[in-house]
Image 1 (cartoon, one colour):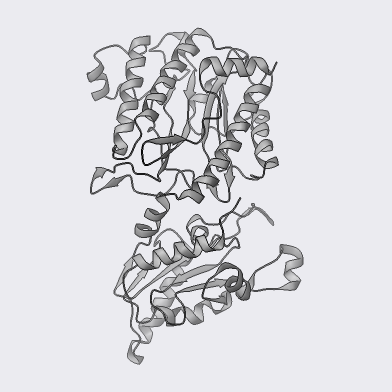
Image 2: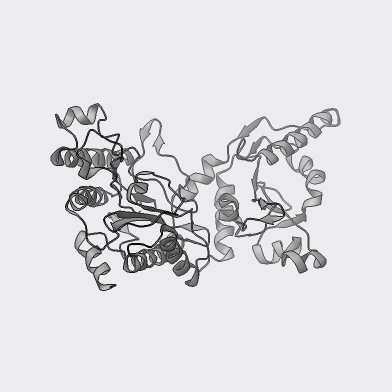
Amino acid sequence: MKLNMQHYKQRRDTLIQQLPAGSIALVPAASLKTRNRDAEYAFRQDSDFYYLTGFNEPDALLVLIPGRAEGQSILFCPPRDPAMEIWTGYRAGPEGCVADYGVDQAFVLAQLDELMPGLINGRQALCYAQGSYPELDARVNRWLTTLRTGVRQGMVLPEQVLLLDNWLHEMRLFKDAAEVEIMQRAATLSAEAHSLAMQRCRPGMYEYQLEAIIQQHCAMSGARFQAYSPIVGGGANACILHYIDNNAELKADDLVLIDAGCELDCYASDITRTFPVSGRFTEPQRALYQVVLDAQLACIDAIRPGVPWGDIHELSIRLLTQGLLKLGLLQGDLENLIRTEAYKPFYMHRIGHWLGMDVHDVGRYKLQGQWRPLAAGMVMTVEPGLYVAPDNLQVDACWRGIGIRIEDDVLVTETGHQVLTDAVPKSIEAIEALMQAGD
């Protein structure tokens, strides 16, 4: 499942229309990264670059120049090299970039330092993600130095360097129907994988075996890569928010928290479910789990256009604090507990984040110092959690070492919201029924 090349061209055209007159924009591709010695990690393209090109080769550079008569989009790319392609695979080369990816012009990377000073010359503003790509920063400095040495010959440096993020990341924040379709497919595959992990979980298994079930189902269904390193935390490991060791044995009386989601055509899914290793919640687990679930359902229900982003988080704080108070993990006045952030030892993260081509996707959360209102096309996660540290001596022993998080991916629609990940069970009854059916 992929977007067509016309989709990427429309995005470039939209960005070009927003750029200041007389500007030039640079968007670099990712590079291959060494894992150890001469082995490399699987290549994953830079999200901004892929969003504008659909081009999945390393070390390229997209240049956008509004109003340029010879063409507004230029791609510098690796050359065709039949001898190297025996080892590294097919490369499009400049001809393929124009024919297959719809850019106006393309050149080999070896021409970059020769041509870029001339392309920047006379432009009023240089737009790129300054500070995010050290190699590009160094190259830009060299190109600007070349222009400075040519001032007497009439070369003109840009008057401004602007962050391209201001335009590009705002575009990426809002998903169109084609993007939502891909994200829904990724979410569905991940939901199926989580359900399989629940069904196959048994005491005595290891965390990495549940991880393997998740990865295998997604890969066999066409999503080779996960959007992030899966978290599989049994027992007290669930209280470590970004636990990725995934090497402990699963004990019968423990919960296990799985935070995992596949990636499809560079679009992420992100699901967390927490369930009992044995297939049955204990009473303390059941009570704490219900608090988290009730908070999550209420927060999802509150999502609709116009609601400030921060309101969803504030709602989660109030509901989780009420639950902690009711169960006796906190004592005192509700308003005072919220004001003093007494909940923080149990709920230390925010309610969620934007989701898209990056699992923690781009886009501003505030506009002019205020939480931005939700709007149709945004996709966010809703993931309240409660974590009782195993060494928390302020609470009864029955609560210690319980970590619970429930996370879904939610699209803001014109009239409310749509949960993309609702195919995986999360009520106590549904989880227990699914796990018992797997016996």
